Length: 219
Image 1: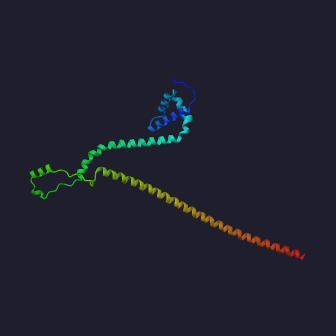
Image 2: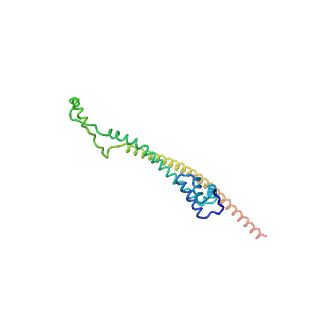
Image 3: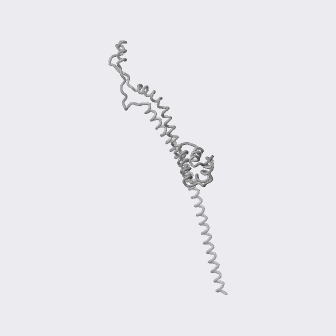
């Protein structure tokens, strides 16, 4: 029975982190990682799990994210390879038939009605298919072309969506600009009225000052 009461050392935490990250990257479970660390440190898997979630994990969050990303990439590559292996027999069976369809038909200088049945049989037996040149189209070429065409269409759709988004954003900015210009025009009109009122107030104060000066001189 695994029973330990001593504290976790830095080396223990490091072993725990490395093991968990390896299992995450390879597509394993954290429980299996805790069991492996428990066997190595003579601790229970529950203790390893508690230590990881309570103390160690927060120090390795970026590493966990990278390990999960690597796991996804490896799974994607594995699925792609498996799919290619499944499609390979189909391609190998279809390729000779497709290549034969692209071969030119045998020609003869004699009219068909002048050829006897024995001559036709002899020519059919001695006829050899022409070798496939690099310029002939194969099934792999067709698949490659269709895949690239699909990628181009997806890229074009993405560009179209981005273009529409930018157009909408541009229209929104133009409307906002017009609203700001209108607001600025109103503020300018208000400022002009304030200036007029201020000038009138200054004139009234000047008149009042002059009248006060005249009254003082009369008295």
